[in-house]
Amino acid sequence: MNTHKRFAAALPLMLGLLTAGCGVAPGAGPAVPPVPLTGTRWSLTQLPGQTDTGPAITLNLEDARLGGSDGCNSYGGAYTLNAGKITVDKNLVSTMMACPEPIMRRATAYTSALVKAAGYSSDGKTLTLLDAAGGLLAVFTRQSDTLGGTAWLATGINNGNQAVVSVGFGAALSANFGADARLTGSAGCNNYMAGFEAAAGKININAPAGTKKACPEPTGLMAQEAQYLKALESAATYRIDGDRLELRTADGALAVSFVRAAPGAPAETPAPVPTAVAALWAGLPNAEYPVEGLSAPAARLKDGVFEEPAAPGSASKNRVELSQERAFGDLDGDGDEDAVVVLVVSRGGSGTFVYLASVINEKGVPKASAAMLLGDRVTVTSLAIQSGTLSVGMLVRKPGEPTSAVPTIPMTRTFKHNGGLVEILR
Image (tube, rainbow, N blue to C red; front, side, top):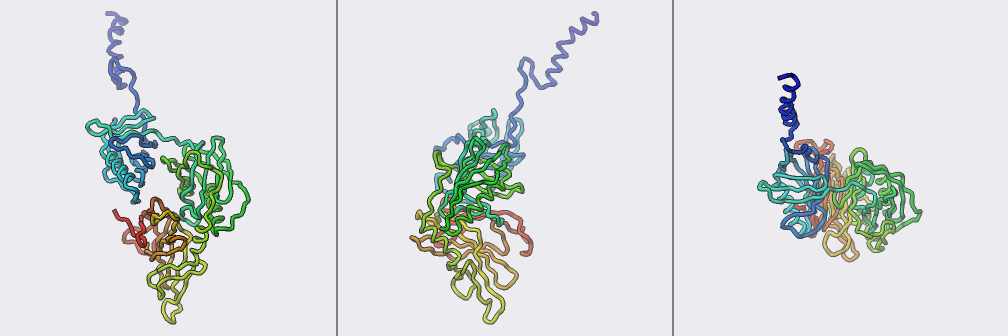
C-alpha cells in the first residue's frame, strides 16, 4: 500500500480520535457550554403548591454564595454547582422580620424548596431548580439591571452620620430614572432633577438641581431633604433585587434604599405632609422618655438633652441625649404613624449605653414606651419599620472583646410593639 492510500485509510480513525478529544460524541453536534450562573440575579415566577402572591422573591448567585429575599426577609448561604447539579447548604441565615401569615407561609415554602435543590437547567433567561428525583421545585426569570425607565420610593437614607434612617414626616421621596438619563423626583419639599449614568452595577449621579420652595414645617423636613439629595449624589454602585433597589457609596455604605413605585405613581409631586403628624414629631427633642437608672421615672428632654447629678452632691452627670437615628411607621396596627428613637445614655462612668424607645401616636398624643437597652458602645446603622415590625441594624463586638473595642460585627435585631418594644427571637 502506498503512502497516499495508507493516509486515506487512517484518516477516519484520526478524525474519530480528534472528535473524542473535544468531548463530542460521534454523530452529535458541537457540545453546548453550560450557561454561567455566577453573578446572575433571578426573580421567582413559579413555586409549585403556592398560589399566594406578595413581595418579590429573588435569588442572587455569586461565587459559592447565594442570597436574596424570600419576600419577607433577606437570606444567604453557600452553594455548589457541578455539571448540572446544585447543592444548597441547608443552614441558610436570614434576617428575622415578621410579616403577615400568607407571606411568611410562602417564604417558608420557598426556602424549603431551595435547600432541596439537586439539579438545575438554564437557558440564560430562565432558571429551573429540580429535586433529586427530577421534580420541579421552582422557576425563575433573569432580572434586568437596567435602571432607565424605572421609578422608586425611598425607604431609608444615609443621614451622613454613619447611620441609615427611615423616611419620616409623612414625606414621599421619589426617584424616577428616565430612559433619557435624567433622574427626577420629589425630595419631600422640592422637586429635583439630575443627570445620571448607570451600567453593570455602577452609577454616577450629578449634583441634583431643584425648585427653591421652603418648607419650615415640620421641623426636620428640610434637613431630611438635604440628606436625601446628598445621599443620591454619593452613590457609586446600584443593585436591583426584585422590587427593591439599593444605592451604595464607593466604600460600600448604603446611601439610599428604595421600593419600586406602583405603576402610574407620580414621580415629581411631593406628598402633602399631615400637619398634625408633623407637629407630633417636631416635639420629639422635648418629650419625656422613661429610662432606667435615673432619679426620676422619665428623662424630660430639652432640645434633645437631659442631665441630672449622678448622685446627690456629685459632679458627675447622668446624661440622656436624643440621637439623630429614628424611624417612622405604624407599629401598633391602628393605621397612624408611630416613631422609634435612639437614646444615648451616660452615667458618669466610661460606659455609653444605647437605648431604643417607641413613641406611639395615640390619636395625636405621643406616648413613649420604656427605653430598651441595645448595648454599651454599640453602633446603630439602620432603623426601619415595615409591616408593624422594627428592624434595627447594628455593629457589635466579637464575643469576649472588651467594651473599649470598636464594634465591627454587623447584626440585625427585630422588634414588635406590645405596650413597649419586644424583641422577636427565632
